Amino acid sequence: MARIPDILEIAQKRPVMADDLELVEEKERVTPGAVQYVIRRYRKQPDWSFEDTGVLNYQYRKSSESAPTLELKFCIAGNVYCNGRNFECEGCKAGISKNCSAKEETMDVMSFTFYPEHLQQYLNAHRSSGFTNQVLSFNHTSSFAKILPLCSRTRMVLEGLLNNTYTESLENIYINAQTQMLLLYSLECMLGEKEEDVTFSCKFLANDTDRDKIINARDILLKHIGEPITIKELSRKVAINECYLKKGFKEIFGTTIFDFYQSQRMEHAKYLLYEKGLSVTDVSLMLGYSSISHFSTAFKKHTGLKPCELLFR
Image (cartoon, helix red, strand yellow):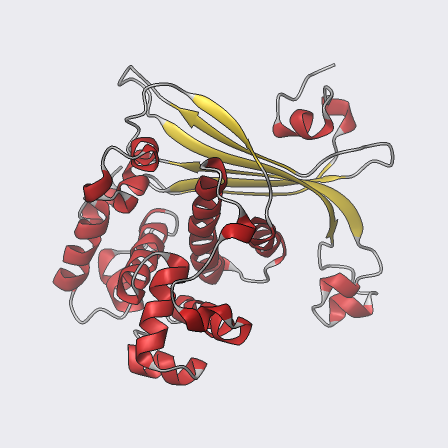
């Protein structure tokens, strides 16, 4: 009987056999130099007893023959699966899978592999000797794996990845953004930061309503990847002044509005070029650039490659 050397074994604390597993859904996407993610959902058996588990796996490579990797793996129990094709179900017909009468309990395994080219953008030049910088630059010279406690923020991101209703390009934009947040929260956990100890220097962020406005601003940016929106327009949409919006965004997400927006646009451009096979001209127009040269300059600044170079990798 085949063995499955997976995070399932860590979560269940005993060997998991291939014959025990019934796959009901699988999603996979690979973009060169970015993030590879795989989501596998298994039908949960009545006798299974699992704990929600997360693992950060850092693989350092001395040899240049294989690239180093930083991988996040999660096993989550207690979710439900509905394929959305049960046309006899009122919930499915209404597009609300949570109300589906045929939904099943699942055991969900998610893995996210981050490559060096992608992680370079997060390095802090002024803190080159810090542990986080060493990990993100793959200068930490020993491999390790660390069990991650799953805080409420991590759980919200994982739930969004499993249950979002986006498709095609919008799904890619959403997943790119969520994987960045997942990396942030996982590194915080690895460094021992407790969720309850997180405080905000901007006093207005202590208010749940104002925090929700900042998070809503981020969601609006993701929906406007191909339609650039000004900070003034964004502040009006979420009903918060520009100064608070910029300060709050930087504090919650660790980056400026412009840098976040540019990063998401370029990650989406990589997807359109490599996965969808679109031309540089088409991608430039889709992302709202006035000229191909402006797009090419922004793309190379973010990825280190010209758009045409990615097409031939």
